[in-house]
Amino acid sequence: MCGFSGFFSNSICRDEGLSVLRDMGKIQSHRGPDDSAVLMNGPVGISFVRLSILDLSTGMQPIVSKEDETTIACNGQIYNYIELREQLPTTHYETSGDMEVALNAYRHLGENFPNSLNGMFAGVIHDPRKHKLLLFRDRFGIKPVYFTQTARGFFFGSEIKPLLIASGARPEMDNSLLPAYFTYRYIPGEKTLFKGIRKLPPASILVLDTETGEIRIKQYWEWTFPSEERKISLQEASEEFNYLFNDAVSLRLRSDVEVGSFISGGIDSSAVASIAAIHKPSIKLFTIGFGEDKYDETSDVDEFLGLMGNRFASAESIKRNCRSDQLSALSCIIRSIEEPISLGTMVPTDQVCSLAAEKLKVVLSGEGADEIFAGYRKFLVEAAALEYPSANASEKRRLLALCPELSLRLDNPGENHIMRHIASEKLFHGEELVPLLGLSGEPKLDMSGIIPPSLSPGTNPISAMQAIEVRSRLPHYVNLRLDKLSMKHSLETRTPFLDYRLAEFSASLPVNLRVNLAAGKEKFICRESFRDHGVLPSSVTDRAKKPFTMPIADWFSNTKLLPEPVQDILLGSEVDRQGILDGNLVRELAKQVTGTGVGPETMISAGDRIFSIVVFSLWYREFMEGTF
Image (cartoon, rainbow, N blue to C red; front, side, top):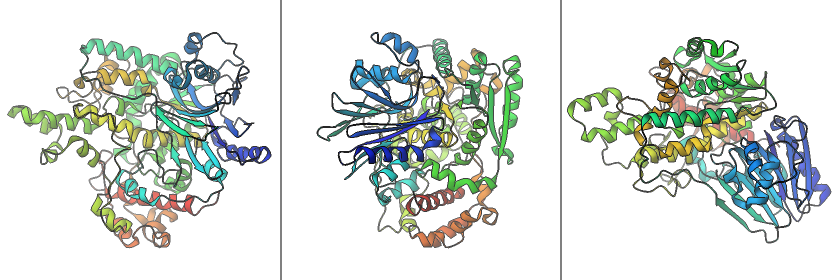
């Protein structure tokens, strides 16, 4: 796990270039505190900072091929590098790690080489003989890569800050994206709130011709659903899932340093930890609790560990509580994430990463299961809405009891399921954004970063919802938050559920093996397989999902107890001074926050709205008014 950055420029001389590269590396040294290097080859410069996890003695980057000077620097891990090394034509390897294998995959397979990689990765390859500079990113956007083009050159990096200092330009905000942020709580798509700075989309490769300066971006993989459902029994699916899941966890335990695991009361991280403990019985487990009982899962974790008998007998469970006074760290958290995102997992994620980093360098996480296997409650509600019209009276009563929120859904029977799904996530609606942002009319939001272009009208609504989640929320919120906050603490997080083989397996399944109305369960195949193969006890597989989030409504219901910078935003003149949002409306919204009737399952509360405003105001102060 590392950080890379660099440039292509015909106007930066070698001495200046080396200095720029060192500065780019220094500002993201938290991603790689163990070593650093810079390299220039003509107009191309590459900077690299290393967190040593695999091939400790010879794995330093950039790696240069002695045969053709092709060079790679990559952030991430290629988990199948041992198998891939055997599949590629015989080559003399100077290292025993994964990135030289990835470089040779490019040298032998060309631009489609990422299809051969099973891992999380974002990197750069310079091919001087073919006059190419390539950026590439993993299938689900687990690892980030940003780029920008200015009069000075083309700049790229694992984070945004290196681009800001290297380009020499003052950061500017793209005001046109503010409606998207305050609608979705993050900005979907390849644009960022920094004008001119873009993200390479997941599963994509960017090719820059160093002779002509021409840039092209192409997608090398897409998560799609077959037009016909696969014919497979529950037992067969359970067996196949069990094999793939075990192998995904096993591959992600490959490391030359100790690997631990996050764990919560949910089935995803518990299953990951359960399989990992078979291979590493003394595994360290990290969990975050809350003083507010309805948000706390530590008792569920203790119950699970006790029920598993000898499997966790040698494991070490390490806990920490997340408290409201830790909101004082918000500015630092936002500076690390770089892009404004305002969901309630930010602070507890920062805390659990900090806790784990005190003990080791690598942890496993259950992230991604809800998107890949339809684990959110909204998938179950949608399935019930689809079934309801043709159900008999008894079944209709059962569906309404199973999903009380279904009654609201039935009020709009003709509404398009895709737009309904997107609307269910909206924090502020168009008419509310007009006074908040001082707009002349309701904004029209760009859907290209949310709806996959290949999504056909005939796609099952559940599958369509999953495709939307994987295109938008997964890379631009879930993975972004996990990468930036883990690397803030020089910690690598690995996500077995985002093994592309598991994703392709899930897409091939009949929908009722993902969401099963008869059983009343989301993520059905996971629950069934985990129980049948002894990965989890039935009391855990039957447990309803509890979202991992902090008690925003509780904490923000008494503004006088909040840290002073947050109070200044909600009660003082900070919003007025910045001049972006309507200060009077912000103060009015702050008065509406209450913890009464709000819990972790609440989709949108007044607390969520006010939190998005706090995050934006702190982001604006850090990046638009700060100094780099």
